[in-house]
Image (cartoon, rainbow, N blue to C red; front, top):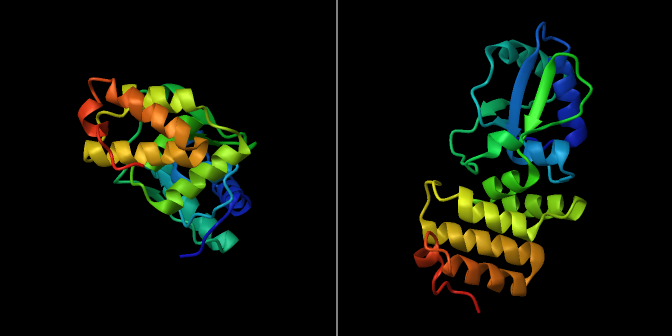
Length: 198
């Protein structure tokens, strides 16, 4: 599949918007959210949503693909998790559209969502977001401890992925600090104890 940057995503969404006849909200996650709102430059092949796709978007999206020549699927992400309270922090992407409202997770929430799988291309996107507008170490650590315990993944792997992300963004000292904090947290103590870091 082709990879699309922010400009192509915006062009596609404007074509979708032009065919909508009533206000419609689309919750965008993943690489598309990072590109549209947080300065990530790595392209994405699709627009993933964390909610069911409104029926009103299906036909406009099909017609937008025909008009623009951009083969950008709009798909429900079946394998995704988010911090507990992410919905309270959603942000509207200022695209100056008429009927389509595009919302994305707040940047720390999106970073934690993309960190879960631990794939290098996901970490690259988070690094690009951080380079565009620095993420807060304290916010990431607080939300990971308080709002990620429900994620369906081996907790030890999840803790490793989080600490690798912290090291990538903030360096080894901050990673060690984060590990000490997790080891002092009764919820994460077992998962983070004795992890294989030097």
